[in-house]
Image 1 (tube, each protein chain N blue to C red):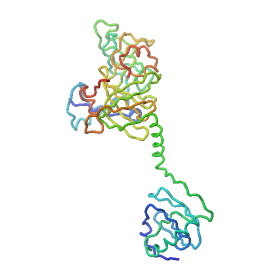
Image 2 (image 1 turned 135 degrees about the vertical axis):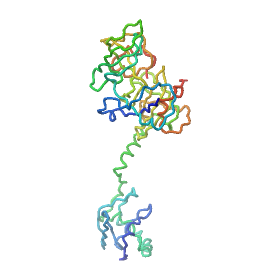
Image 3 (image 1 turned 90 degrees about the horizontal axis):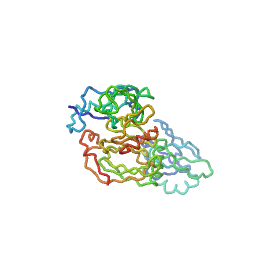
Length: 169
Length: 223
């Protein structure tokens, strides 16, 4: 298993026009392994890009779904960033939940591996892609949210998710 | 008039810090450099010529006709003996009336450095920015958008990007099972306090390898 050497992609300039992840075919790496970084790992650099059609995201509320695949990023042709809403299809769900496998749901991206700039010059990025399922009005389906959420949700008027969150990054 | 047979190379020997004023009408009054050519004009009277810039000196003084008289006794003696070295003739005799000394000329390539210094000085009044290196474990207090309590971030500095007033540090920390990386502009007025809590010995300037490592390397308890 080759370790993925993540390159720090500056938001904007290095991602212009690069819609897909420019990844040489490497299987997914378990996050927690400590593998020795060899010289060949440098070639497995990955550009973090938008959440777009086909992106699998983790669901971090207790709505019942586990994983969701993005089928449409609303609002932008390039893809969704931190704080945007996506339409997804539930790929994996818990047996007794509010949603089941195959449902088409709306979700708010609460954690993204692509960094998002804030107006004070800071940038924030998380280590995984995560989503909170909402209904069409923007209210969360579940009643709990796990993990940190960013400030950006306040501007996007997802105040309820912020209220349920464990930690606001 | 002291005549000196000037060799081309001797013209390029510059004096040290002190800028000399040219003699009034004893020797070569001005030498103007243009690219590789050197043209020497000898004039008996005071002449005005454009100021020539040098890379080394940052301050220039325009020669005053009145002052040269005081310097000449000391310098003529020296000049006669050292005909090889030519005084720096870039500061030129001007017209008869005295002008106040010109302010130091700011070169174009220094402007950004000066502006950055000014901006950093302004930012330092809000808080004192300590010397941060990658591997430091740092606590940052930042003002939030709604201006209530200060948000506290504690993490390890994995990279520092220096560029004047937009020097940024990238902090990595772990909360609630997920790792977060935030880039902070160090001189931002929103950041109220930066404190280096401890330091970890690292042999890199950028610690991106921490992303592949176990989370315990970037997990820190707050308080």
